[in-house]
Length: 399
Ligand code: PMP
Image 1: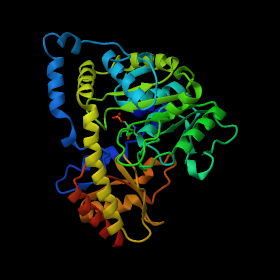
Image 2: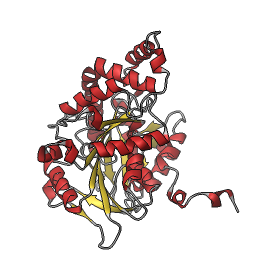
Image 3: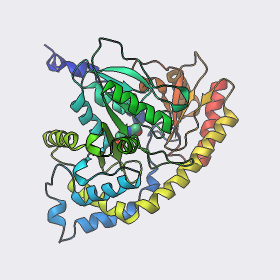
């Protein structure tokens, strides 16, 4: 018997993330990386955090900051989130808010909450790789969810007789990896679909605050609330994150949902890690209250300009037959290469010859299709670097 024979069956579906493996290679000097979807660290409100941690560790609050705390999360932060959610159209109470260790933990818990082996999860094709990884551990089938308001009814491919559809997962604003936004009609259609299927909706709002142009569209949860009147009657579970706005390293995210969902997630949190780091929640609360509203416009300006620069450079340098999305926010542009051009091969060549990195798109498809796609991130490179990197990428593609 080998060590691995002892492992549970669910482990057979767990693969090393291509992105994580790739990020390890990117420490080499001189690489222009459009790979990781990570915030620019020079934009972290670092001084505000330094002051916030100092305050948390001051004599009158250190006992609280360094102590165990409740699984639901630090109350003042949950109160701030109630206010924040109201500003984006979601009326809820603190009892509807759970703090998680990043929204990634929420995705894991929601997989655990809804999925028995063989159940169906509807996801975008492509979709966020981390969501696929989180759900995968609960041994679901994945089916294709397609929502796009102007192109007719939402489609899903659930075959009759297969496992029950438990939820539809989507990131309606500036999705990872495509950068695309689901319009109002698409969100309403999705709610109709969820009612028809009697399934939950997992709304991933990781990039929600990062809109650079166009009018904000209410979250799916806000639209459902408008229909049903009370969050207790809503099937949508909203996952939020401070990772893209304040800091990913502190691992603070949140879930907003009806009370029975929150109660069950609290039990999971107790079993998994008791609570998210107390001092991190206190610091995020402090910084969010001090500067969230002034910090977001800064991020929008810088990232919006980088997006524009990357779109301009693609227009200039990509050969015919290459197509890409034009996101209104977020961190990503999704590029479709001519048929037959393989994104993974292109990466190998680009790294070797011009030192440019990105993520091959295949990993974002549950069935590993999409080999002629790549994801470019514009968030962590300055504008000159973006221009230079895209120029080099154009050269490789032409070669
Ligand atoms: N959802 C999406 C769509 C993401 O892109 C990410 C991070 N890349 C996450 C969730 C997880 O973020 P975190 O756990 O840092 O909140």
